[in-house]
Amino acid sequence: MTTSTASSWQVRIGAYVALTKPRIIELLLITTIPAMFAAQRSVPGIGLVLATLVGGTLAAGSANALNCVVDADIDAVMRRTRSRPLARHLVPTRNALVFGILLGLASCAFLAWTTTWQAAVLAVVAILFYVFVYSLWLKRRTSQNIVWGGLAGCMPVVIGWSAITGGIGWPAWVFFGVIFFWTPPHTWALAMRYREDYAAAGVPMLPVVAPERVVVRQIVLYSWAMVVCSLLLIPASSWIYAAVALPAGLAFLAIAHVLHFRVLRGVPAQPMTLFHLSNLYLTAISVAWAVDAAVGLGVIGWPR
Image (cartoon, rainbow, N blue to C red; front, top):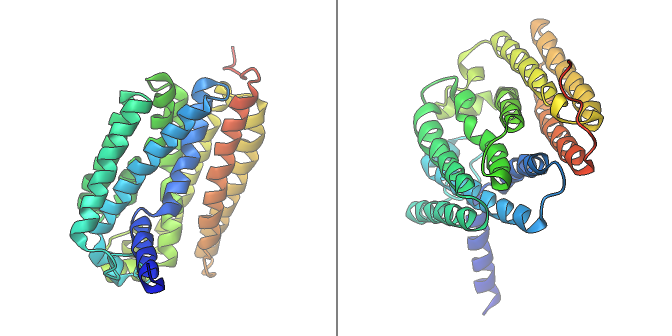
């Protein structure tokens, strides 16, 4: 194989990998593992964890690749996404569609074989919701697109829990809620930074169609809901989780309120500070939830 041929194959493989949006997959997997630890209330078997992560990666890659097919025209317009494979014509649209479908089928079969059929069904539901409800329906029609479309991003928690127990316990639903309320502040902060991009692409993100004051007020409200929801996990955890969730939540609220105050005072908003903090916040409480379960101390429980 010549050097040019090898380079061509590397570019092609890299393009297919890029279709799956690996950085987004990393964020999704961060919430899968803690749910498995919490469901077990100890360290689950490494084989089951790896199987769930592989199946979850295939499912997320499928949803992301199919999203790239649906959003190819948008990606070509936006500066933030114009380097994606379909926008650069590195992968034929038909191939990307087949690739996404095959990944979805593989994820379902693999999860059903190695974990539980409930986890496999939930993965398929997440893929279909992300593609048909969010990408094809909500994204181009409503400023609330990311609120309800974000439900797909909450699914790794219940998939991870179901892979362990075959069901879904209430702590999984609570953390599902944390991610649900986390998604709007995270995404709207990014959309504030790239408002012109979304406007040029015709995507009615809230920062495109509403005044900044409305956007930051919504960010504050969702941030409060997220933090309150995160604290509901304390009775099912020990002091380890509480010692991280409480200060992390207060820090997030502080930055959200700073963003709000800056907009009210007419000072440049700097929304990317909140965006980057949101990734750190979700990682911190996810890791704390997992470590808390792995250590296995007695749970705090509800007041009597």
